[in-house]
Image (cartoon, rainbow, N blue to C red):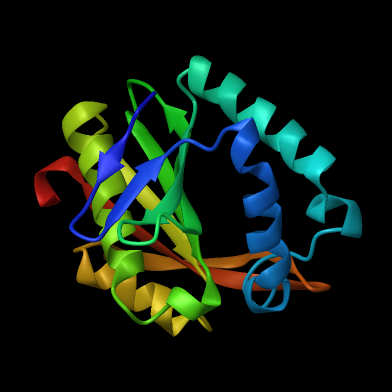
Length: 181
């Protein structure tokens, strides 16, 4: 089990015992997250669907394709989001994507920055990646600030990259190389 830590947070893979709290987090943030992410069908917000996704994430980790963590507040031990290094590609690329989501009530407090820094530290220093990329909606200024604060570089725009709420939307592509970290 890969555990991470930052000054105010800790990160650990979700387990079956966490699923009810995770489903509550999903439901509580359904409207907030679907501003920038594709809408999910109602069954997505069930214990059964999330147990399936957890099994898929565990399999992806066994294969070295993904590492995912719940973001926990150090003082309250409350689950406040998630962060992942995913779509891991080995040499000749040695690259991956980073993704993260925070509970709406825990945004604008620096937690996103701490989570991304912790995951990047793992990706570059412990896992040995060369490049990490992130895609973010041009409308998601808070997420752009997080990526820029940790030192990621905006490389360009991916035109009509993701189908969100019935529309193909552009996304900015950010990256960081191991020597940038």
